[in-house]
Length: 149
Image (cartoon, rainbow, N blue to C red):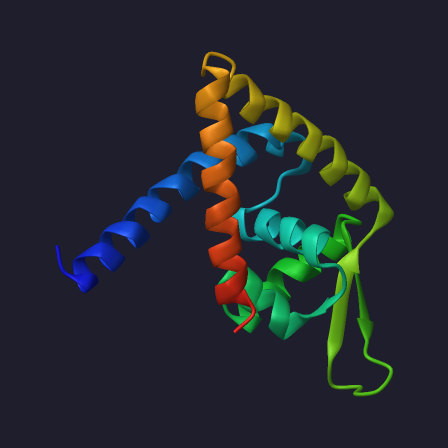
């Protein structure tokens, strides 16, 4: 196998992991109670983990356009999930962050999410869990290295 094939297979394997986690995350978040679109949910999660960011940065984190983030932000603000403020230095920049209400919801959801993931691994032998931890730490190290570029 040549270098390009190895890189393609590695990326392909990683991309297969994401839908599994996304499914559990989405199922953990009782969307019936909050009536959020997929983009709104991604925005809430991104803000939870990244704190206050500009609308442009949020669009990049979520992987969508500034316009779509702006439309979704209006709805989230109406629901009391986010707060938007103009930047004190550059008035053209709008910063966005989660309300305390949203942070509490995400904390509770994150707990349910982690418990649900943990349940998925209950039948896996401890030695395989050690290997999984070691592998996950290694993958995270590589992803952080890419992120730091």
